[in-house]
Length: 249
Image (tube, rainbow, N blue to C red):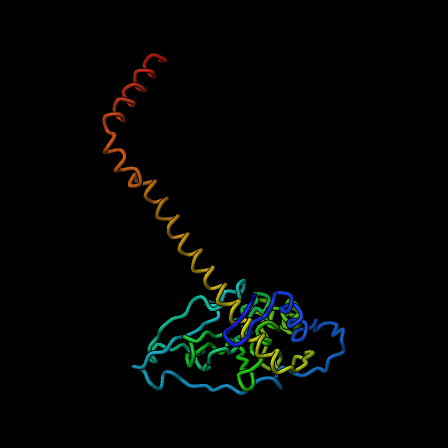
């Protein structure tokens, strides 16, 4: 079963639910009504952290988003006096942030709870789902190859291709609103991202253990206790090998 405290789905229901919420935007095979993305989102707030030079905030930059996983993997805690010029946009939990720079890198992410009310770069277009519903759809849309292709086609600049917020907000997409399914889809997206985070954490721990073992192996620390306990046998073996080399010579 796939589920959430409020909703439980059988695996066969997952595909049916996905088909009700998402459809190929390129072909719209079922002829769903189309809307502009701007019709699905609310305005966001901005502030200048430099107004409070001694106050701290968490800053989300484009480099901190992993395009492969579609997640925020790195942030910086800064004082207002250290705020970059681009640190202006306030984000809230479940906002979808989309990098407007080099869209082919697919740097999009869903803002987690612990980054609620923090600040992201103006290099992101921030999508805040109306009434806090449908953020799962917006996030899933941002991960589609079709979405990346649409932004890449609209990008300007050869060495530093970029799009504007308007380019994203004016994209027309097929959309059919089904209230309960939208809520279920939102919950399932959160479940999937939570599982991805656990996987990344596990991989990080394994890499750390592996690096530690390799270091100990190369420095001799890994076998130090064994060598100390078997020093007599080790010395005897080394002496035997030396004699064999002398005979060969």
